[in-house]
Image (cartoon, rainbow, N blue to C red; front, side, top):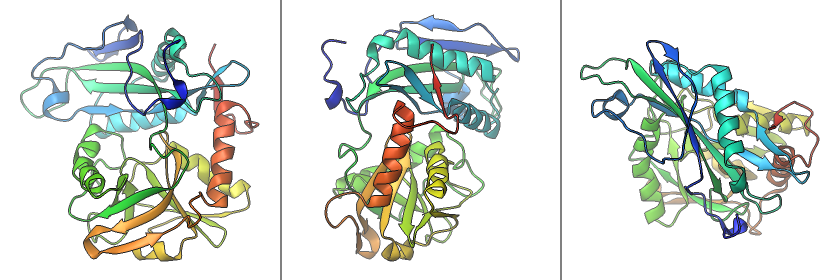
Length: 339
């Protein structure tokens, strides 16, 4: 693409040439269709609109220095979409269809693939919705699986620089035994109140606490939380947190770097004892956190006092990004080159 300033791309939607789609009718998935339209025809009584039968994934394709396009741990995204589908009683996509769809969507939009070294990537959005019409509350009889892509820059405009986060207590992202541990649209709809509250207060994203006691850290907007202290990588454990593939990978890399890893409830007061804290996920990889402000109790926690990410967060970030772009050895078989 000649007219795109790759290094200045926001994290947002940009029209590309094609997307792919497939329907499940009578319990069977049909053939993959290729479309140049950005729109879908949806029945006015579809369960996606009325009853929230909708799930999605977020992935990225990376252009390596060698000119090869890489995707990262796509099988984990497939498994998570399968869990999401089962969680709200949708027809799961087959592994073969998932792989074919994401590969086709990336390769057919290859001219939108950001070049190596620009800091930009090609975001991949698989989407599964109940397209069948139902007025009563029950699963749809028809489902649509679609994949579109868009070149994107960093999720936080600060990039790999400290961001400011605000704790919100007057709304919940998800409830225990609800849909928090699967990737469905309703979780993000319920997070919008906190997102706007945090941004109106001058912060990048909200930190949600558990919905029962308002005592333990849940998620940071659309990302997982982690903290570093005493050579230990600590991340919350909860039934209402979405298992992050990025966080899963960081925990493994942390262990290999000689850190102890703990996944357990993390009380908000424990923030005072952390040496480094961050948010992690597909969109941001790692966003180091420089400040957390607990709005309702008027308490501020500060980190990154020199204005830079901490040494362990930096090392983890560089290692993971290096693997994704092909600059570091992929000893785990996490990366697949598209051909």
